[in-house]
Amino acid sequence: MWYEPDEQALDDEPRTRHLPLREMLGRIVPLFRPHRGAVALASLLLLIAVAAELGGPLIVRHLLDVDIPSGDATGVLIRALAYVVLFAVGMGAAYLQVVLIAKAGLKIVTALREQVFAHLMTLSLAYFDKNPPGSLMARVESDVERLMMLFSDVALALFRNLILFVGTFTVMLVFNPRVTLAVLALVAPLVAGTYFFLKYIRRVSRTVRQLYARISAFLVEYVQGIPILQIFGYTEQAQLGLMNRNKEKYSKEVRLYFVEYAFWAAFASAEIAAVMIIIYVGARQVFDAAMTIGTLVLFIEYTRRLFWPLIMFSEQLDFIQRAFASADRVFQVLDTPSRTPERPGASAEIPADWREIAFEDVSFVYDSGVKAVDRVSFRVQRGEKIALVGLSGGGKTTITNLLLRFYEPAAGRITLDGIDIRDYRQKSWRAEIGLVLQDIHLFPGNLGDNLRVLRDSIGDTALDRALHVVQADEMLSRLPDGYATELSEGGANLSMGERQLLCFARAVVEDPDILVLDEATSSVDPVTEARLQRALDALLKGRTSIIVAHRLATITRADRILVMHQGQLAEEGTHAELYGRKGIYRDLFDLQFASQMGA
Image 1 (cartoon, rainbow, N blue to C red):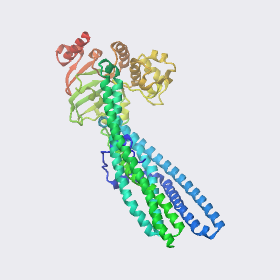
Image 2 (cartoon, one colour; image 1 turned 45 degrees about the horizontal axis):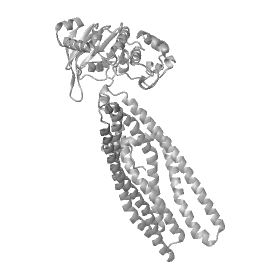
Image 3 (spheres, rainbow, N blue to C red; image 1 turned 45 degrees about the vertical axis):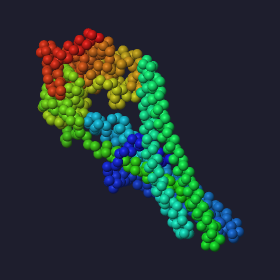
Image 4 (cartoon, one colour; image 1 turned 180 degrees about the horizontal axis):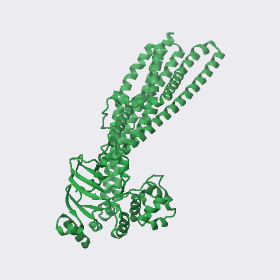
């Protein structure tokens, strides 16, 4: 049934539309303009289909009132053939208009999904900090999918049911206003009752779905921890916890089904009641010669056809409200400006002979109000290897994110030979930088796809060079299909070290001048780290490097070490210089060395 919302809809229920209806329609209607020809033709076919449906009972009426009483066998045959033709025309028109609208709806939604996804690619990291992947997937997929139903099935069905409802009552009023008003007196409260019933069902359904989600979360959490439950003897308590949750869901669900089936049974009874009213009122008129048998049958047929549009109309209004909420969220994504916009006239050419990157009194504050970086200044000479160290939350990763232009400084600037990096296009600037993150992310596909990052213009020669740089030739030779080797989800058919090597190689496929490594070896064991360190030394050779590291032993050979503390640059120097100062760096180094020795 239309009123049964999906889980995403349930999550969205408390939210209301922010755009006024007029503005909302002003955003939706233009989406149909490229398909106005198809929409116009579908509307015409819809009118033909409805006219054919309304015409059937009229033919039956003529058959009963004229052809059969007069014994006109030819008339009976003609009316029978006309009924068949009318039915065929109606079905054909309905089929064609559904195909046309469905195609238009698919094209609109496909274009809208691509537009939303493309816009997401332009937004800054600050947007993704506040919008988790699950929410964004809902915007790109669930909300847009709901709009497809609005643009095709629902809008079409609503329009059809509205025309059918109006047309049916118009014909009934023409033939007998008294009987029509009697039916209307029964139908009107039924429509209102159906609408409020559907609202109640949605509210109860939401509760049931929430309880179902709780049970699912409970099962996932406890099934993953079965060994712990067994060791600590907590299995019986876990079973009791699931039983209590099941009981709560069962009681709510039983009540829901009882009310639901009772209502629809009553609704079906109302249809029978309407037919009985027509027979009671109409039969008396037949005996009084005020109504013909054909007109009585016509009213019965129209009344039986009247109830399905009423059900659909109530449910579609409810769905449209939710679809408008989805449209508002989609438009909110499209209306969200990037917080790292391109400057007008930004250059696409990065100087090949640049000498220095400088942070000049750079500050950055997150939306939460946390000051992540506070008036930080330092310079990086070309070819220099810089390490960023410090306690978690000190501002290390924020520094690299600012360099990568995932964020914009709140104050100060980052320059390349005195020119603000914002004067260069983001794509051109980022093409100069190779990035290796702590969290290894591998895309679906084969090894070559992951090294190229879906850039088909990169040939195997560049991949060979990148793997050779990070000393991963042996890994390639062991894979059965070379670059065509399909990777399991998350690269599960590779070891952790091989996955990290793959990320190293990916960073240098296009031979960037600058490398940024954010905790690139922190997720592997010491033996693997030693192997990766050799690859890392080869990777960094001759390149400007900025390395964020927790394991201080890995950066003792850095040209300079910057110690970040509470968003500020607290210390700066080589390993020997900083260790000799007996400051923050020495405390961190000694603490880490002591913990490793203790281990």
